[in-house]
Image (cartoon, rainbow, N blue to C red; front, top):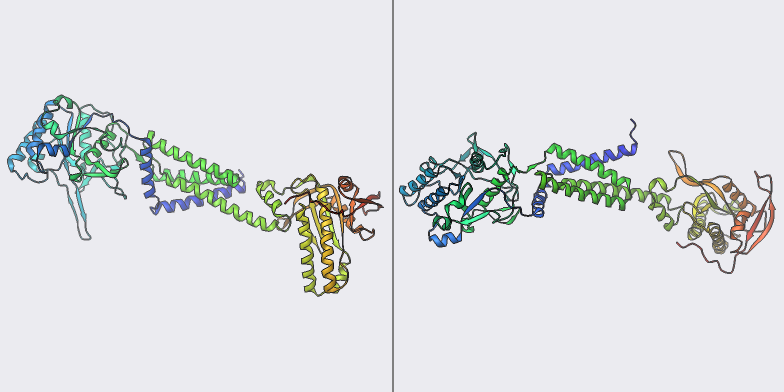
Length: 592
């Protein structure tokens, strides 16, 4: 199978862009923006009402005011709460409060709580896993509840939730490793109890996962601690529910930043409610694998590069922009409905780089093309040429053109009077005037041949009045040469004149040449005849000679005179030739 070289080039460029993006991604440059993108997607999705029967009993400001205790509260108060809850028979109770030190009120206070925990039979307690890394040692502490309290609990586990680089909580761990032993987390133990109670059929993940937050603070049903402890809320209210007890008061500093609480005001117990909802509903968010992401970036790199090179910059930019929007939408849908976190930033950077690469390359190519073609076309015509697709700019085609040849009379004799440096300066001045005249009237300079100039009209752009424009250019050239003649006579003596021949007909026009060198030109009998007409100005008393074809196209616009018939080399039948007189004023028919 033969793959076009252009497609190979696109593929190579796409791979290079992919490599750059992967290096940037490996450096961690994107991660900050990626975390922000995760927040933005959840915020755009909005709050979702939790489905699991989770109730939070909050240790809040009102409870401090009503109970009138300083923190830490007497453990007998917690025992009183548990006695009330036990009567309602909740599915499981999670205590997001650390009891790592004996009560300041003595053993009886601890015994009261321990007995209440044992009576309830379904209480999960919190532990705090800590780790100290030093160059010469590593110290781990589980910080569990004191023995008298924990021995009667249904279990205890770490309540730790990892912080991301920006100090936000987005991730939960089903289990931790403590002294090389797997240790279930606080949330995992609660999940197992809920599973036993028939509140879920989901499976506990084996790896860390991103929390599928339902919303911000107070998204979950919450009741104040004091109202439950005082019996203001019926115990039946908690039947077969998951009850989480924890601090929501900012004074206790158990608050964190999350995608829905960017100011850092989500209580730890609300975080655990979101983790439990994620587990119970079986909707943990997992980030796309590195390998999968690499393949997607590569695919986007090649697709984006193809779009950028397939279309002009403006159209390509719109297509790339549409693709960027589509990837954003796909990532959002994957996160919202597929629980798949697909990295946003590498996709956008990849597509932006493909467009930037193609734009810069296109700019450089256009600049080179402009420099290459600027000697032949006027700026306005050149701009129009460069707007066209590359493969349609200067391709070969048959078209009707008006060709103009101009030549300095007796140039050999003139050049003999001048030094080589003076000849070069003279020709530069002369060609500058001729070129400006051709450009002013919409023509293109095909080539310079010694002291002769060949110009085309109606190529490469359509010009309905091309014959008229060619004659106007010829008259303009003669006027400019007359001015140059005055300067030439003063400097060098002698007389400077030029002859011009114009013919209109069909020619092959386009880019021609070899692989090493090519140019935009025209060939055919029309071109040859135009050159022969210019030579006839040496034999007839006229500085401008036009063919009969051109004459019929311009006779209503300029004074003309029939010069008779002339024999042309290569033609058996003589042709009619005409001269054009300079009217009092020639109004240019071409603007630009």
